Image 1 (tube, rainbow, N blue to C red):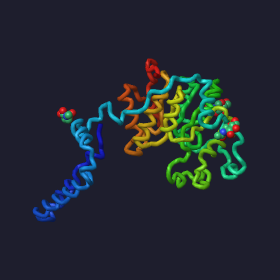
Image 2 (cartoon, rainbow, N blue to C red):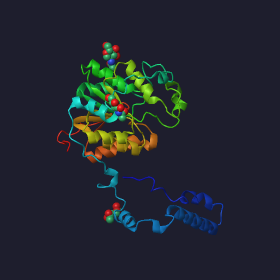
Image 3 (tube, protein in one colour):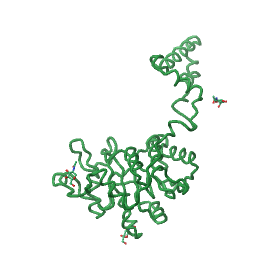
Length: 319
Ligand SMILES: *[C@@H]1O[C@H](CO)[C@@H](O)[C@H](O)[C@H]1NC(C)=O
Ligand SMILES: *[C@@H]1O[C@H](CO)[C@@H](O)[C@H](O)[C@H]1NC(C)=O
Ligand SMILES: *[C@@H]1O[C@H](CO)[C@@H](O)[C@H](O)[C@H]1NC(C)=O
């Protein structure tokens, strides 16, 4: 694996030919030495004694090889035995919301005044692309897990699709911290409420949309980070037949989401995601998908803006 952060060339080299025309060679040599020395100082640990010698020799001896087993590939994937489908929603309500639907008595009068009217089509990105109908009609999922929900555009689309495919009880579990990302309002401000006491109100705006669509009995928010939410699903034996990954678009977020989501994907189920082509983080999503598919021996099928992995082998029975 290429580690671009470590393989950048010494800073002095590209400037050498152009400098040489203007400076006497002795000055150039002195300059190169000084720059090299400064670069060395910057890259060396501030205090040699603070570095664990065992770790240093491990890094040296292992040649910085990233072949497994390595922490990059180490995720907690020994999940609990799957619980029956009809226990999934009650378990989540019990564990997360004191056995009460988060939609009961929602919205309170105080919250209602802070929200925008529910949109017929909430702001989303690629949320109604054909990949959703293709996968839902072939897999006919009972449990769908979505990572990255924002205002719920794709969750509501999947609800509509499952309803039309005679799957009115499919459960759609939405993992998102419902905070968007820093400064998203500068571009999408007119689609979201004004923040209130530092709360972005995305969760409540999403819930209002779900209520308006009459889907509160089966679209459930899990309002935590995707990694803590997935770890909980793994611990509680909650698996998805179809899992959509559309949360953080940097390599490390996508890598973590994909690995942990695969752990709670039912054998025979399908993992797919958005933004296969996004340039963010030097194509971080695609790098994560490619690395994962190679590590697991899966095929990646691009589908419009999305990526789809070949189904999880049925012999990979959860522990
Ligand atoms: C380090 O990498 C070089 C070149 O790829 C290889 O020849 C060598 O055997 C490796 N050493 C170890 C300790 O893996
Ligand atoms: C949980 O709900 C019950 C009612 O079902 C209520 O009596 C109790 O106070 C609630 N507990 C907490 C911690 O909110
Ligand atoms: C489901 O069917 C209804 C009624 O025919 C239609 O209006 C709606 O667009 C369909 N949903 C999807 C996602 O195709």
